[in-house]
Amino acid sequence: MADDQARSATAAADAVLIVRDLECRRGDRVLFAPTSFVVAAGAIVWIRGANGQGKTTLLRTIAGLSAPAAGEIVWAGAPELVPRPLYLAHANALKEDLTVAESLRFLLHLAGSHVDGRDVDAALERFGMASRKDAFVRTLSQGQRRRVALARLAAQRELLPWLLDEPFDALDAAGVELLAGVIAQHARRGGSVVLTSHLPLPIDEPAPVTVELREPALA
Image (tube, rainbow, N blue to C red; front, side, top):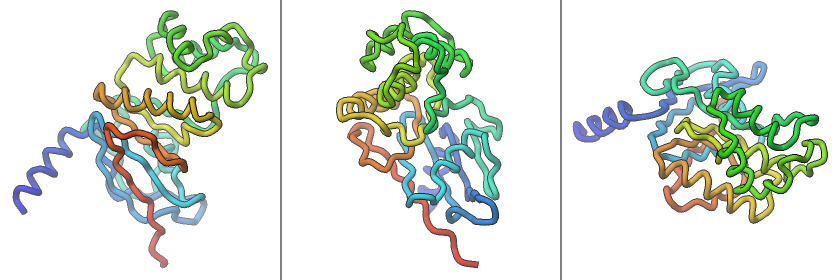
C-alpha cells in the first residue's frame, strides 16, 4: 500500500495535467459522474463517452473556456494554465478571405506560437496542402479545410499539451493515418495529448490511455 501511494505521489508530481473529481453541467443537467485522471508527459489520453455526455464540454473546461461545476484542474503543478495548451475544436477557425498559408500563419500567431514561413510550408506539405497554399480558404472542401486546421499541429515548435476534439472528423483514410502519425510523434517527443474520438484510434505506440465518462448518479 505504501509503495502504491509513493508511485501515485510521484506520478502526480511529474504530471503535466491532473484532473480531480471534475463535474460539468449543461444548464441544470450534470453531464457525467465525477471524473479524475492524470496526464503525464508523453501520454495520449482518449476521452470516451456516449453522444451528448459532455466530451466537448470536458475539453473546453480543461482548456479554460468553461467553468467546471465541481472538481479541480491542475496544470504543471499550478492551478493556472501553465503551459497554455493548444486547443483544436470541431470548428476549423479558418478565415474565408485568407489564403491557406495566411490562415495557418494567423492560427499560429493567435496561439502565441513562433511563426516561421519554413515551418508553415513544411506543415502544409505534410498534410498534402502545399499545392493549395495560395488558394483562398473559401475554395476548399471540408476535408481540405480540416487538413489546413490540423497542419498547425505539425507546424507547432513548442512542446505544448494538445487538446483535440474529434480531430479525425472529415478526414479520409489517408488523412486519418497521417494525423495519427503526427499525434504519436508529438507524444514520443514528450508532448501530452488529450483527445476525443468516436473512431478507434489507429495509434499503437504510445498506447492511448482510455478515460470513460460515466453516467452521473441519479439524485
